[in-house]
Length: 324
Image (cartoon, rainbow, N blue to C red; front, side, top):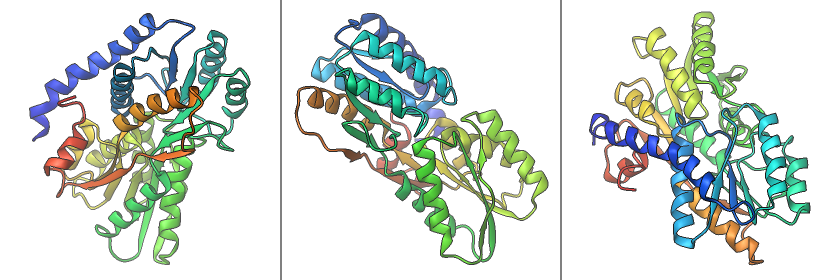
């Protein structure tokens, strides 16, 4: 399946997914809903669109009412705290939270629990593991996967850059630690200071472009989420026409698939956000009923390269909207 064969269908589903957020909010009873608070409701970020599909699938299966509300940008941590505060006052049966900050959301998360509301975290956890369960990728292991993959493309002494998103996100911290720890055992590898884009594609692009103008020794770049990977790829497309710098990243947006086909992005770790969303709702209902739930559920990830992207299984991961 080539990217052009699914672009139109995906665009339509993304629009429906964005509308689905608004529809779900209007239909959910204020005092009965499970409330999902993602890091962002930006419809351009496909990861959250797919997670939303999983949430809605579980809601339909388990006959649960779902509200979805969140900040327009992942960097708006104060806004996310405000939304959680407002949601506590609505007294839903459960809150599913993707925390944008590992530390700053802890006090408000404790307020959720003190109010007798079940708290589940998805994608990103909180310091102290205060929620009943965290449903997420094992991001540290995924970061190390990127290192092993990069070694297949870059041999010998090399200087690497990391382009990441929100510095204080639990997801970011684990991925960065995974990459840095993976490179520690290689004395020929140098890793420069991480570039944080605040989850802005344009900022990731500008930071990477400036880096490439200042450093001619960069041989590999690690993009730590969808937005950061796309921004870095855009800069490489302009600044490295010979494709001498290798890029590995996270997630599976249409833009990333296009960059892989063009040889700008060598590989990406594909998460399973549909599974995350589905399990988050299922687990929230179980925990609300007083059932024992696992404190951490790893939804898994797969490393996909340009060479392996056309297998049937990997096509399903790269194009999760198709057939849903």
